Length: 494
Length: 95
Image (cartoon, rainbow over all chains, first blue to last red; front, side, top):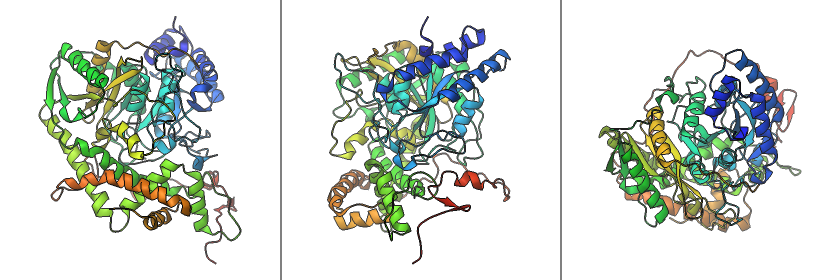
Protein backbone atom coordinates (compact mmCIF):
# COMPACT_ATOMS: atom_id res chain seq x y z
CA UNK A 1 0.00 0.00 0.00
CA UNK A 2 1.05 3.59 -0.66
CA UNK A 3 2.42 5.48 2.34
CA UNK A 4 -0.54 7.07 4.08
CA UNK A 5 0.83 10.59 3.60
CA UNK A 6 1.07 9.95 -0.15
CA UNK A 7 -2.62 9.10 -0.58
CA UNK A 8 -4.83 11.42 -2.57
CA UNK A 9 -7.66 13.14 -0.71
CA UNK A 10 -10.18 10.96 -2.56
CA UNK A 11 -8.34 7.74 -1.66
CA UNK A 12 -7.98 8.79 1.97
CA UNK A 13 -11.63 9.79 2.23
CA UNK A 14 -12.79 6.46 0.84
CA UNK A 15 -10.45 4.52 3.13
CA UNK A 16 -11.61 6.56 6.14
CA UNK A 17 -15.25 5.88 5.37
CA UNK A 18 -14.59 2.16 4.97
CA UNK A 19 -12.77 2.13 8.28
CA UNK A 20 -9.53 0.94 6.63
CA UNK A 21 -7.58 3.80 8.09
CA UNK A 22 -8.08 6.43 10.79
CA UNK A 23 -7.48 10.15 10.61
CA UNK A 24 -5.06 9.74 13.52
CA UNK A 25 -2.98 7.33 11.41
CA UNK A 26 -3.06 9.63 8.38
CA UNK A 27 -2.14 12.60 10.54
CA UNK A 28 0.75 10.81 12.26
CA UNK A 29 2.12 9.79 8.85
CA UNK A 30 2.04 13.42 7.71
CA UNK A 31 3.54 14.75 10.94
CA UNK A 32 6.38 12.26 10.56
CA UNK A 33 6.93 13.31 6.95
CA UNK A 34 6.99 16.97 8.05
CA UNK A 35 9.52 16.23 10.81
CA UNK A 36 11.87 14.80 8.21
CA UNK A 37 11.42 17.59 5.70
CA UNK A 38 12.90 20.69 7.30
CA UNK A 39 15.26 20.99 4.32
CA UNK A 40 12.27 21.91 2.17
CA UNK A 41 11.41 24.93 4.32
CA UNK A 42 7.76 24.30 3.53
CA UNK A 43 6.15 24.18 6.97
CA UNK A 44 7.00 27.30 8.97
CA UNK A 45 4.74 26.89 12.00
CA UNK A 46 4.03 23.28 12.94
CA UNK A 47 0.82 22.58 14.85
CA UNK A 48 1.01 18.90 15.85
CA UNK A 49 -1.14 19.34 18.98
CA UNK A 50 -3.98 20.91 17.02
CA UNK A 51 -3.56 18.23 14.35
CA UNK A 52 -3.78 15.33 16.79
CA UNK A 53 -6.79 16.85 18.53
CA UNK A 54 -8.66 17.43 15.28
CA UNK A 55 -7.73 13.99 13.94
CA UNK A 56 -9.22 12.31 17.01
CA UNK A 57 -12.35 14.44 16.70
CA UNK A 58 -12.60 13.60 13.00
CA UNK A 59 -12.36 9.87 13.72
CA UNK A 60 -15.22 10.17 16.19
CA UNK A 61 -17.28 12.00 13.59
CA UNK A 62 -16.57 9.40 10.92
CA UNK A 63 -17.54 6.62 13.32
CA UNK A 64 -20.80 8.47 14.00
CA UNK A 65 -21.48 8.48 10.27
CA UNK A 66 -21.30 12.27 9.95
CA UNK A 67 -18.37 12.74 7.62
CA UNK A 68 -18.13 15.38 4.90
CA UNK A 69 -15.48 14.68 2.25
CA UNK A 70 -12.71 16.64 3.97
CA UNK A 71 -13.36 15.05 7.38
CA UNK A 72 -10.11 13.63 8.76
CA UNK A 73 -7.98 14.84 5.83
CA UNK A 74 -4.63 16.37 6.92
CA UNK A 75 -3.94 19.67 5.16
CA UNK A 76 -1.49 22.56 5.32
CA UNK A 77 -2.59 26.19 5.51
CA UNK A 78 -0.71 29.00 3.77
CA UNK A 79 0.69 31.51 6.25
CA UNK A 80 -1.51 34.21 4.66
CA UNK A 81 -4.64 32.75 6.31
CA UNK A 82 -5.38 33.95 9.82
CA UNK A 83 -5.69 30.95 12.11
CA UNK A 84 -6.94 31.41 15.65
CA UNK A 85 -4.17 31.29 18.23
CA UNK A 86 -1.61 30.17 15.64
CA UNK A 87 1.08 32.44 14.20
CA UNK A 88 -0.07 34.01 10.93
CA UNK A 89 2.65 36.22 9.54
CA UNK A 90 2.10 36.36 5.78
CA UNK A 91 5.81 35.53 5.54
CA UNK A 92 6.66 38.96 6.95
CA UNK A 93 8.70 40.26 9.86
CA UNK A 94 6.13 42.99 10.38
CA UNK A 95 3.63 40.39 11.65
CA UNK A 96 6.13 38.77 13.99
CA UNK A 97 4.36 37.42 17.05
CA UNK A 98 0.87 38.00 15.62
CA UNK A 99 -1.59 35.36 16.78
CA UNK A 100 -5.03 36.11 15.42
CA UNK A 101 -8.02 36.03 17.74
CA UNK A 102 -10.09 34.75 14.83
CA UNK A 103 -10.08 32.19 12.03
CA UNK A 104 -10.33 33.04 8.31
CA UNK A 105 -13.60 31.94 6.72
CA UNK A 106 -11.86 29.52 4.34
CA UNK A 107 -9.79 27.80 7.03
CA UNK A 108 -12.83 27.80 9.34
CA UNK A 109 -14.89 26.05 6.65
CA UNK A 110 -12.16 23.42 6.26
CA UNK A 111 -11.91 23.03 10.04
CA UNK A 112 -15.68 22.70 10.39
CA UNK A 113 -15.71 20.10 7.62
CA UNK A 114 -13.32 18.07 9.79
CA UNK A 115 -10.04 18.78 7.97
CA UNK A 116 -6.92 18.48 10.11
CA UNK A 117 -4.51 21.45 10.12
CA UNK A 118 -0.89 20.26 10.24
CA UNK A 119 0.74 23.68 10.23
CA UNK A 120 1.30 26.94 8.39
CA UNK A 121 3.09 26.98 5.07
CA UNK A 122 5.85 29.17 3.67
CA UNK A 123 5.17 31.88 1.12
CA UNK A 124 6.60 35.03 -0.39
CA UNK A 125 6.20 38.02 1.93
CA UNK A 126 2.60 39.27 1.63
CA UNK A 127 2.31 36.96 -1.42
CA UNK A 128 4.56 39.30 -3.39
CA UNK A 129 6.94 37.15 -5.37
CA UNK A 130 7.21 34.25 -7.78
CA UNK A 131 10.00 32.22 -6.17
CA UNK A 132 9.29 32.14 -2.41
CA UNK A 133 12.56 34.04 -1.92
CA UNK A 134 11.02 37.11 -0.28
CA UNK A 135 9.84 35.17 2.79
CA UNK A 136 11.09 36.18 6.26
CA UNK A 137 11.38 32.44 7.03
CA UNK A 138 13.86 31.84 4.22
CA UNK A 139 13.30 29.95 1.00
CA UNK A 140 10.94 27.08 0.45
CA UNK A 141 12.69 24.52 -1.74
CA UNK A 142 11.24 22.49 -4.58
CA UNK A 143 11.29 18.73 -3.88
CA UNK A 144 12.10 18.27 -7.57
CA UNK A 145 15.69 18.46 -8.81
CA UNK A 146 16.97 18.73 -12.37
CA UNK A 147 18.52 15.43 -13.45
CA UNK A 148 21.54 14.65 -11.27
CA UNK A 149 22.03 18.26 -10.23
CA UNK A 150 21.88 19.05 -6.53
CA UNK A 151 21.05 22.69 -7.14
CA UNK A 152 18.11 23.93 -5.07
CA UNK A 153 15.19 24.94 -7.26
CA UNK A 154 12.33 27.28 -6.46
CA UNK A 155 8.92 25.74 -5.83
CA UNK A 156 7.52 28.95 -7.33
CA UNK A 157 5.60 31.61 -5.51
CA UNK A 158 3.90 32.99 -3.77
CA UNK A 159 2.32 29.72 -2.53
CA UNK A 160 5.73 27.99 -2.64
CA UNK A 161 5.44 26.24 0.71
CA UNK A 162 2.00 24.89 -0.20
CA UNK A 163 3.26 23.54 -3.53
CA UNK A 164 6.38 21.98 -1.99
CA UNK A 165 4.38 20.39 0.84
CA UNK A 166 1.83 18.82 -1.51
CA UNK A 167 4.49 17.60 -3.97
CA UNK A 168 6.61 16.11 -1.18
CA UNK A 169 3.64 14.30 0.43
CA UNK A 170 3.84 16.31 3.66
CA UNK A 171 0.07 16.84 3.50
CA UNK A 172 -2.76 15.64 1.28
CA UNK A 173 -3.73 19.12 0.15
CA UNK A 174 -2.98 22.73 0.99
CA UNK A 175 -4.60 26.12 0.75
CA UNK A 176 -3.07 28.67 -1.56
CA UNK A 177 -3.94 32.17 -2.70
CA UNK A 178 -3.58 33.61 -6.16
CA UNK A 179 -3.32 37.32 -6.99
CA UNK A 180 -1.40 37.07 -10.28
CA UNK A 181 -0.58 33.36 -10.54
CA UNK A 182 0.47 32.43 -7.01
CA UNK A 183 -1.43 29.12 -7.01
CA UNK A 184 -1.00 28.10 -10.64
CA UNK A 185 2.71 28.92 -11.15
CA UNK A 186 3.90 26.96 -8.05
CA UNK A 187 1.59 24.08 -8.98
CA UNK A 188 3.17 23.94 -12.44
CA UNK A 189 6.69 24.07 -10.93
CA UNK A 190 5.99 21.11 -8.62
CA UNK A 191 3.85 18.77 -10.73
CA UNK A 192 0.72 19.45 -8.70
CA UNK A 193 -2.77 20.76 -9.45
CA UNK A 194 -3.69 24.32 -8.48
CA UNK A 195 -7.12 25.89 -8.88
CA UNK A 196 -7.79 29.62 -8.74
CA UNK A 197 -11.57 29.95 -8.48
CA UNK A 198 -13.69 32.76 -9.94
CA UNK A 199 -13.23 36.01 -8.03
CA UNK A 200 -15.83 35.95 -5.26
CA UNK A 201 -16.05 32.16 -4.89
CA UNK A 202 -13.89 31.95 -1.76
CA UNK A 203 -14.36 34.46 1.01
CA UNK A 204 -11.38 36.75 1.49
CA UNK A 205 -12.32 37.38 5.13
CA UNK A 206 -9.40 36.67 7.44
CA UNK A 207 -6.90 36.28 4.61
CA UNK A 208 -4.18 38.90 4.85
CA UNK A 209 -4.99 41.27 1.99
CA UNK A 210 -2.54 41.98 -0.83
CA UNK A 211 -4.61 43.30 -3.77
CA UNK A 212 -8.25 42.94 -2.82
CA UNK A 213 -9.72 43.09 -6.33
CA UNK A 214 -7.43 40.25 -7.48
CA UNK A 215 -6.85 38.01 -4.43
CA UNK A 216 -8.57 34.64 -4.44
CA UNK A 217 -7.96 31.52 -2.35
CA UNK A 218 -7.96 28.04 -3.83
CA UNK A 219 -6.88 24.43 -3.29
CA UNK A 220 -3.48 22.94 -4.16
CA UNK A 221 -3.63 19.19 -4.50
CA UNK A 222 -2.12 16.17 -6.24
CA UNK A 223 -5.07 15.48 -8.55
CA UNK A 224 -7.93 17.30 -10.24
CA UNK A 225 -10.44 15.22 -8.27
CA UNK A 226 -8.81 16.39 -5.04
CA UNK A 227 -9.01 20.02 -6.22
CA UNK A 228 -12.74 19.47 -6.82
CA UNK A 229 -13.24 18.03 -3.33
CA UNK A 230 -11.11 20.50 -1.39
CA UNK A 231 -12.17 23.46 -3.55
CA UNK A 232 -15.85 22.86 -2.86
CA UNK A 233 -15.14 22.79 0.88
CA UNK A 234 -13.34 26.16 0.68
CA UNK A 235 -15.96 28.01 -1.38
CA UNK A 236 -19.30 29.52 -0.53
CA UNK A 237 -21.04 32.74 0.35
CA UNK A 238 -19.81 34.76 3.32
CA UNK A 239 -21.61 37.93 4.43
CA UNK A 240 -18.33 39.10 6.01
CA UNK A 241 -16.80 39.61 2.53
CA UNK A 242 -18.86 42.09 0.51
CA UNK A 243 -17.45 40.70 -2.75
CA UNK A 244 -18.32 37.10 -1.87
CA UNK A 245 -20.78 35.64 -4.36
CA UNK A 246 -24.15 34.51 -3.08
CA UNK A 247 -24.27 31.49 -5.37
CA UNK A 248 -24.62 27.80 -4.58
CA UNK A 249 -21.44 25.70 -4.86
CA UNK A 250 -22.12 22.68 -7.06
CA UNK A 251 -20.80 19.19 -6.37
CA UNK A 252 -17.72 19.56 -8.56
CA UNK A 253 -16.60 15.99 -8.01
CA UNK A 254 -19.86 14.66 -9.39
CA UNK A 255 -19.22 16.67 -12.55
CA UNK A 256 -15.94 14.84 -13.29
CA UNK A 257 -17.07 12.57 -16.09
CA UNK A 258 -14.04 13.13 -18.30
CA UNK A 259 -16.46 13.55 -21.20
CA UNK A 260 -15.56 16.73 -23.08
CA UNK A 261 -16.92 15.73 -26.49
CA UNK A 262 -18.17 18.78 -28.36
CA UNK A 263 -16.57 21.27 -25.96
CA UNK A 264 -14.89 24.18 -27.71
CA UNK A 265 -11.39 24.95 -26.47
CA UNK A 266 -9.75 28.23 -27.50
CA UNK A 267 -6.04 28.57 -28.25
CA UNK A 268 -5.02 32.23 -27.93
CA UNK A 269 -2.38 33.25 -30.45
CA UNK A 270 -1.12 36.03 -28.18
CA UNK A 271 0.18 33.46 -25.67
CA UNK A 272 2.72 32.28 -28.22
CA UNK A 273 5.41 34.56 -26.86
CA UNK A 274 8.68 35.48 -28.55
CA UNK A 275 11.53 33.48 -27.12
CA UNK A 276 9.23 30.88 -25.55
CA UNK A 277 11.29 27.70 -24.90
CA UNK A 278 10.68 24.90 -27.40
CA UNK A 279 9.68 22.55 -24.58
CA UNK A 280 6.81 24.81 -23.55
CA UNK A 281 5.67 25.07 -27.15
CA UNK A 282 5.77 21.24 -27.48
CA UNK A 283 3.90 20.77 -24.20
CA UNK A 284 1.18 23.10 -25.40
CA UNK A 285 0.88 21.31 -28.75
CA UNK A 286 0.64 17.96 -26.94
CA UNK A 287 -2.11 19.37 -24.73
CA UNK A 288 -4.02 20.52 -27.79
CA UNK A 289 -3.77 17.02 -29.27
CA UNK A 290 -4.92 15.40 -26.03
CA UNK A 291 -8.05 17.52 -25.84
CA UNK A 292 -8.72 16.95 -29.53
CA UNK A 293 -8.40 13.19 -29.05
CA UNK A 294 -10.85 13.44 -26.16
CA UNK A 295 -13.42 14.84 -28.57
CA UNK A 296 -13.12 18.58 -28.01
CA UNK A 297 -13.11 21.08 -30.83
CA UNK A 298 -10.00 23.27 -30.84
CA UNK A 299 -10.30 26.79 -32.18
CA UNK A 300 -7.75 29.58 -32.63
CA UNK A 301 -8.83 32.69 -30.78
CA UNK A 302 -7.48 36.16 -30.20
CA UNK A 303 -7.17 38.00 -26.87
CA UNK A 304 -5.71 41.20 -28.28
CA UNK A 305 -4.89 43.04 -25.03
CA UNK A 306 -2.84 40.19 -23.52
CA UNK A 307 0.48 42.03 -23.75
CA UNK A 308 -0.90 44.82 -21.55
CA UNK A 309 -1.89 42.48 -18.72
CA UNK A 310 1.39 42.51 -16.80
CA UNK A 311 1.86 46.30 -16.92
CA UNK A 312 -1.79 46.70 -15.86
CA UNK A 313 -1.24 44.30 -13.00
CA UNK A 314 1.87 46.19 -11.89
CA UNK A 315 -0.20 49.33 -11.47
CA UNK A 316 -3.32 47.85 -9.89
CA UNK A 317 -1.74 45.32 -7.52
CA UNK A 318 0.80 47.74 -6.00
CA UNK A 319 -1.86 50.47 -5.74
CA UNK A 320 -4.16 48.20 -3.76
CA UNK A 321 -1.22 46.86 -1.75
CA UNK A 322 -0.10 50.35 -0.75
CA UNK A 323 -3.57 50.94 0.64
CA UNK A 324 -3.99 47.51 2.27
CA UNK A 325 -0.54 47.51 3.85
CA UNK A 326 -1.04 50.95 5.39
CA UNK A 327 -2.47 49.10 8.38
CA UNK A 328 1.00 47.86 9.40
CA UNK A 329 1.95 50.84 11.50
CA UNK A 330 3.35 49.28 14.66
CA UNK A 331 0.26 50.18 16.68
CA UNK A 332 -2.27 47.36 16.62
CA UNK A 333 -0.36 44.16 15.95
CA UNK A 334 2.99 42.74 15.00
CA UNK A 335 6.35 44.42 14.99
CA UNK A 336 7.20 47.89 16.32
CA UNK A 337 10.68 49.33 15.83
CA UNK A 338 12.72 50.31 18.87
CA UNK A 339 12.50 54.07 19.06
CA UNK A 340 15.05 56.64 20.11
CA UNK A 341 14.57 59.38 22.65
CA UNK A 342 12.41 62.10 21.10
CA UNK A 343 11.00 59.95 18.29
CA UNK A 344 7.35 60.75 17.64
CA UNK A 345 4.59 58.80 15.99
CA UNK A 346 5.82 59.51 12.43
CA UNK A 347 9.27 58.11 13.23
CA UNK A 348 7.55 55.08 14.71
CA UNK A 349 5.65 54.47 11.46
CA UNK A 350 8.65 55.06 9.24
CA UNK A 351 11.10 52.95 11.22
CA UNK A 352 8.62 50.15 11.87
CA UNK A 353 7.77 49.84 8.19
CA UNK A 354 11.42 50.17 7.07
CA UNK A 355 12.50 47.39 9.43
CA UNK A 356 9.38 45.23 9.18
CA UNK A 357 8.89 45.06 5.41
CA UNK A 358 11.30 43.33 3.03
CA UNK A 359 12.67 45.00 -0.10
CA UNK A 360 10.10 43.69 -2.61
CA UNK A 361 7.20 44.68 -0.38
CA UNK A 362 8.64 48.16 0.14
CA UNK A 363 9.18 48.51 -3.59
CA UNK A 364 5.57 47.62 -4.36
CA UNK A 365 4.08 49.75 -1.59
CA UNK A 366 6.05 52.73 -2.87
CA UNK A 367 5.17 52.10 -6.53
CA UNK A 368 1.55 51.91 -5.45
CA UNK A 369 1.90 55.13 -3.48
CA UNK A 370 3.37 56.80 -6.55
CA UNK A 371 0.68 55.71 -9.04
CA UNK A 372 -2.02 56.84 -6.62
CA UNK A 373 -0.40 60.18 -5.79
CA UNK A 374 -1.82 63.51 -6.89
CA UNK A 375 -1.03 64.22 -10.52
CA UNK A 376 -0.40 60.57 -11.47
CA UNK A 377 -3.68 58.94 -10.49
CA UNK A 378 -5.26 59.43 -13.91
CA UNK A 379 -2.15 58.72 -15.94
CA UNK A 380 -1.43 55.42 -14.19
CA UNK A 381 -4.15 54.08 -11.95
CA UNK A 382 -7.23 55.11 -13.91
CA UNK A 383 -5.60 54.16 -17.20
CA UNK A 384 -4.78 50.72 -15.80
CA UNK A 385 -8.38 50.24 -14.67
CA UNK A 386 -9.53 51.08 -18.19
CA UNK A 387 -7.09 48.62 -19.76
CA UNK A 388 -8.25 46.03 -17.25
CA UNK A 389 -11.79 46.52 -18.60
CA UNK A 390 -10.45 45.86 -22.12
CA UNK A 391 -8.66 42.69 -20.99
CA UNK A 392 -11.86 41.41 -19.43
CA UNK A 393 -13.79 42.30 -22.60
CA UNK A 394 -11.36 40.16 -24.64
CA UNK A 395 -12.44 37.12 -22.64
CA UNK A 396 -16.14 38.02 -22.71
CA UNK A 397 -15.95 38.26 -26.50
CA UNK A 398 -14.51 34.77 -26.99
CA UNK A 399 -16.87 33.23 -24.44
CA UNK A 400 -19.81 34.86 -26.26
CA UNK A 401 -18.52 33.27 -29.47
CA UNK A 402 -18.94 29.84 -27.94
CA UNK A 403 -15.57 29.10 -26.36
CA UNK A 404 -15.97 26.86 -23.30
CA UNK A 405 -12.40 26.96 -22.01
CA UNK A 406 -9.00 28.28 -23.03
CA UNK A 407 -5.78 26.24 -23.02
CA UNK A 408 -2.41 27.96 -22.44
CA UNK A 409 0.95 27.11 -20.91
CA UNK A 410 0.97 27.73 -17.13
CA UNK A 411 4.48 29.17 -16.97
CA UNK A 412 7.12 30.35 -19.45
CA UNK A 413 9.68 27.85 -18.06
CA UNK A 414 10.22 24.99 -15.63
CA UNK A 415 11.32 25.71 -12.03
CA UNK A 416 14.50 27.80 -11.93
CA UNK A 417 17.36 27.86 -9.45
CA UNK A 418 17.05 29.67 -6.16
CA UNK A 419 19.47 32.48 -5.45
CA UNK A 420 19.83 33.91 -8.93
CA UNK A 421 20.56 37.61 -8.84
CA UNK A 422 17.76 39.61 -10.36
CA UNK A 423 19.05 43.03 -11.27
CA UNK A 424 15.77 44.10 -12.78
CA UNK A 425 12.63 43.46 -10.68
CA UNK A 426 10.58 43.27 -13.89
CA UNK A 427 12.40 40.06 -14.87
CA UNK A 428 10.75 38.15 -12.01
CA UNK A 429 7.36 39.62 -12.89
CA UNK A 430 7.43 37.85 -16.29
CA UNK A 431 6.76 34.53 -14.50
CA UNK A 432 3.11 35.51 -14.30
CA UNK A 433 2.72 36.35 -17.98
CA UNK A 434 0.28 33.48 -18.68
CA UNK A 435 -1.63 33.60 -15.41
CA UNK A 436 -2.15 37.27 -14.59
CA UNK A 437 -4.84 37.90 -17.24
CA UNK A 438 -7.10 35.48 -15.37
CA UNK A 439 -6.93 37.52 -12.15
CA UNK A 440 -7.53 40.77 -13.99
CA UNK A 441 -10.65 39.29 -15.60
CA UNK A 442 -11.79 37.52 -12.39
CA UNK A 443 -11.97 34.12 -14.11
CA UNK A 444 -11.32 30.60 -12.81
CA UNK A 445 -8.06 28.98 -13.92
CA UNK A 446 -6.40 25.66 -13.16
CA UNK A 447 -2.86 24.39 -13.65
CA UNK A 448 -2.53 20.70 -14.50
CA UNK A 449 0.80 18.82 -14.71
CA UNK A 450 1.10 17.30 -18.18
CA UNK A 451 4.76 16.54 -18.79
CA UNK A 452 8.42 16.63 -17.84
CA UNK A 453 11.16 18.67 -19.48
CA UNK A 454 14.44 17.16 -20.71
CA UNK A 455 15.94 17.49 -17.19
CA UNK A 456 13.01 15.65 -15.63
CA UNK A 457 11.28 18.72 -14.19
CA UNK A 458 7.48 18.98 -14.25
CA UNK A 459 5.67 21.31 -16.63
CA UNK A 460 2.03 22.31 -16.52
CA UNK A 461 -0.70 23.65 -18.74
CA UNK A 462 -3.38 26.10 -17.71
CA UNK A 463 -7.08 25.91 -18.49
CA UNK A 464 -9.17 29.06 -18.14
CA UNK A 465 -12.94 28.78 -17.72
CA UNK A 466 -16.06 30.91 -17.79
CA UNK A 467 -16.97 32.73 -14.59
CA UNK A 468 -18.63 30.48 -11.96
CA UNK A 469 -18.13 27.39 -14.12
CA UNK A 470 -15.40 25.75 -12.06
CA UNK A 471 -17.22 22.42 -12.43
CA UNK A 472 -17.00 22.46 -16.24
CA UNK A 473 -13.43 23.71 -16.02
CA UNK A 474 -12.39 20.95 -13.62
CA UNK A 475 -14.01 18.37 -15.87
CA UNK A 476 -11.92 19.58 -18.81
CA UNK A 477 -8.86 19.55 -16.54
CA UNK A 478 -9.78 16.01 -15.53
CA UNK A 479 -9.88 14.93 -19.19
CA UNK A 480 -6.48 16.56 -19.75
CA UNK A 481 -5.07 14.92 -16.61
CA UNK A 482 -6.30 11.49 -17.73
CA UNK A 483 -4.84 11.93 -21.21
CA UNK A 484 -1.49 13.21 -19.92
CA UNK A 485 -1.21 10.41 -17.36
CA UNK A 486 1.29 12.39 -15.28
CA UNK A 487 2.44 10.09 -12.46
CA UNK A 488 6.05 11.20 -11.87
CA UNK A 489 7.09 11.98 -8.31
CA UNK A 490 10.21 13.76 -7.08
CA UNK A 491 12.94 11.38 -5.84
CA UNK A 492 13.35 11.90 -2.09
CA UNK A 493 16.62 13.67 -1.20
CA UNK A 494 15.53 15.65 1.83
CA UNK B 1 9.28 60.09 -17.31
CA UNK B 2 12.22 59.62 -15.06
CA UNK B 3 12.22 59.49 -11.27
CA UNK B 4 15.06 61.29 -9.49
CA UNK B 5 16.20 60.81 -5.93
CA UNK B 6 14.12 63.78 -4.73
CA UNK B 7 10.94 62.16 -6.05
CA UNK B 8 11.99 58.79 -4.63
CA UNK B 9 12.45 60.42 -1.22
CA UNK B 10 9.05 62.07 -1.48
CA UNK B 11 7.33 58.78 -2.33
CA UNK B 12 9.08 57.02 0.55
CA UNK B 13 7.83 59.78 2.86
CA UNK B 14 4.27 59.42 1.57
CA UNK B 15 4.46 55.65 2.10
CA UNK B 16 5.84 56.18 5.63
CA UNK B 17 8.86 54.01 4.93
CA UNK B 18 12.23 55.32 6.05
CA UNK B 19 14.86 55.11 3.31
CA UNK B 20 18.46 56.14 3.99
CA UNK B 21 19.90 58.77 1.64
CA UNK B 22 22.50 56.38 0.25
CA UNK B 23 19.76 53.94 -0.79
CA UNK B 24 17.77 56.49 -2.77
CA UNK B 25 19.62 56.18 -6.11
CA UNK B 26 19.01 52.39 -6.26
CA UNK B 27 15.37 52.92 -5.30
CA UNK B 28 14.93 55.55 -8.02
CA UNK B 29 16.45 53.10 -10.49
CA UNK B 30 13.97 50.36 -9.48
CA UNK B 31 11.09 52.81 -9.86
CA UNK B 32 12.29 53.75 -13.31
CA UNK B 33 12.54 50.11 -14.39
CA UNK B 34 9.01 49.36 -13.19
CA UNK B 35 7.49 52.60 -14.49
CA UNK B 36 9.24 52.08 -17.82
CA UNK B 37 7.47 48.72 -18.02
CA UNK B 38 4.12 50.29 -17.11
CA UNK B 39 4.62 53.05 -19.72
CA UNK B 40 3.38 50.64 -22.45
CA UNK B 41 -0.17 51.28 -21.29
CA UNK B 42 0.12 54.69 -22.95
CA UNK B 43 0.00 53.00 -26.37
CA UNK B 44 -3.69 52.23 -26.03
CA UNK B 45 -6.59 54.52 -26.80
CA UNK B 46 -8.81 54.24 -23.74
CA UNK B 47 -10.77 57.48 -24.08
CA UNK B 48 -14.16 55.78 -24.36
CA UNK B 49 -13.53 53.03 -21.83
CA UNK B 50 -15.06 53.09 -18.35
CA UNK B 51 -12.49 52.25 -15.67
CA UNK B 52 -13.29 48.93 -14.01
CA UNK B 53 -14.70 49.24 -10.50
CA UNK B 54 -15.73 45.63 -9.95
CA UNK B 55 -14.56 42.60 -11.89
CA UNK B 56 -17.90 40.88 -11.27
CA UNK B 57 -20.86 43.11 -12.07
CA UNK B 58 -22.56 43.45 -8.71
CA UNK B 59 -24.24 45.87 -6.40
CA UNK B 60 -22.65 46.02 -2.99
CA UNK B 61 -24.84 44.19 -0.50
CA UNK B 62 -26.62 46.33 2.06
CA UNK B 63 -27.90 45.59 5.53
CA UNK B 64 -29.69 47.32 8.37
CA UNK B 65 -27.56 50.02 9.99
CA UNK B 66 -27.37 48.33 13.36
CA UNK B 67 -24.59 47.16 15.65
CA UNK B 68 -23.77 43.53 14.87
CA UNK B 69 -20.54 43.04 16.73
CA UNK B 70 -18.47 44.54 19.51
CA UNK B 71 -17.47 44.23 23.15
CA UNK B 72 -14.16 42.60 22.26
CA UNK B 73 -11.69 45.03 23.73
CA UNK B 74 -9.38 42.38 25.15
CA UNK B 75 -9.23 40.50 21.86
CA UNK B 76 -8.59 43.66 19.89
CA UNK B 77 -5.73 44.71 22.16
CA UNK B 78 -4.30 41.20 22.52
CA UNK B 79 -1.73 41.63 19.73
CA UNK B 80 -0.78 45.26 20.35
CA UNK B 81 2.95 45.94 20.77
CA UNK B 82 2.02 48.35 23.56
CA UNK B 83 -1.43 48.43 25.17
CA UNK B 84 -2.19 50.21 28.44
CA UNK B 85 -5.38 50.60 30.42
CA UNK B 86 -7.54 49.42 27.56
CA UNK B 87 -5.90 51.60 24.92
CA UNK B 88 -3.28 51.28 22.19
CA UNK B 89 -0.23 53.22 23.35
CA UNK B 90 1.87 55.26 20.92
CA UNK B 91 4.68 57.82 21.29
CA UNK B 92 3.77 61.42 21.84
CA UNK B 93 1.81 62.80 18.86
CA UNK B 94 1.66 66.49 19.81
CA UNK B 95 4.68 68.27 21.25
